[in-house]
Structures are given as C-alpha cells and as structure tokens.
Image (cartoon, rainbow, N blue to C red; front, side):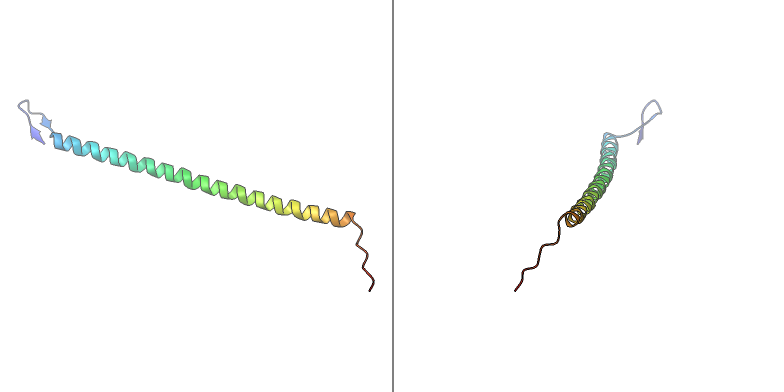
Length: 80
C-alpha cells in the first residue's frame, strides 16, 4: 500500500489482482462444497429409494408366492 498526494492509502494493481483471485478461489471453493453436499444428499436419497423399492419387490414376490400356494391344491405324487 502506498500513500498518495492526498494522504489516502492506495493499494497496488498487484494487490487488487491478488484480492480478486483470492475472492474468486474462495467463492469457487464454497460453490464446490455446496454442490458436493447436494450430490452427497442426492446419492443418499437415491440409494434409500432403491432400497425401499427392493424391499417392496421382495414383499410382493413373497405375498404372490403365498397366495399361489393357498389357491393351488398340492400336486398328486406319481406312483412308482
């Protein structure tokens, strides 16, 4: 920083550029963090939904199997 002829402090172009780059990097890092959080949450939600679907499919399959067993008489055994 330098003092101008008016007594006010002035910052150099290099420092202005450094501050701009620093702010850009900080903003980018923050945004990347937000996106990573969103993606992590989305992956968790998708995994939970798929797990729930799989559970329902197993329950439906078991219910269908039980219903079929109750409706069909046992097959006669063949005689030797």
